[in-house]
Length: 265
Image 1 (cartoon, rainbow, N blue to C red):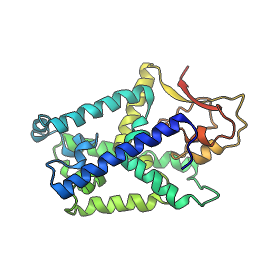
Image 2 (image 1 turned 135 degrees about the vertical axis):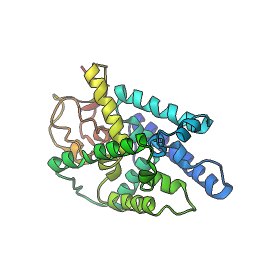
Image 3 (image 1 turned 180 degrees about the vertical axis):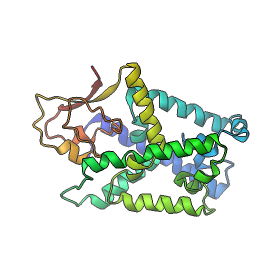
Image 4 (image 1 turned 45 degrees about the vertical axis):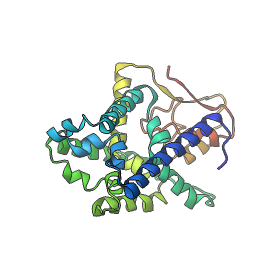
């Protein structure tokens, strides 16, 4: 993998670090029988378990309590910095990214979903968020947790059929559509977007990708290589809430310093 910018280097290191932590955690569960699951590390696990008495009691667990605190910290940071978690930390996002790169590295022309369809498909994750939140509040989140790919992986070597099927689907479809789960189905991504929107409404300063209109030659390389299929040529600042700040647009741009990360006006 060719890395030029210090930000890309930092992202690469952080991605591998959290992926390694997740793999070691999973190995410890399978081999050593640790009393936790990798699902405890997921910031959306509170919704999976539901807001029941058992969930409230589980906050006494130091591991799960830290997960909840971490989740709220990510949500607060999303108000100012967007979805950095998705780009730098989330192991599922990292796996999808590198699976797509592995199977498409020899492809000379990258194909993207048409933007008018992308906008419609990206709304599905808000429906997933609404359904899972309602199930959690109603105390019947066990219906959703059966489909959760993270929970299914965390239960290995035991088999959670529906979750493993969805995990396999994410991997297979992810060969053809980069970050398929992140773009269309992830409820936590939808929640992060809502917090971003909240910050926008309140008027908090937000950091975004800025396109220097004087330097840009509208070649479209940035949009073509965006893993979230965002059309970066539409405006000066990337206001699309689905931007995960992976900085690939700046890496692929043929004109250095045309796309930079800066505070919105």
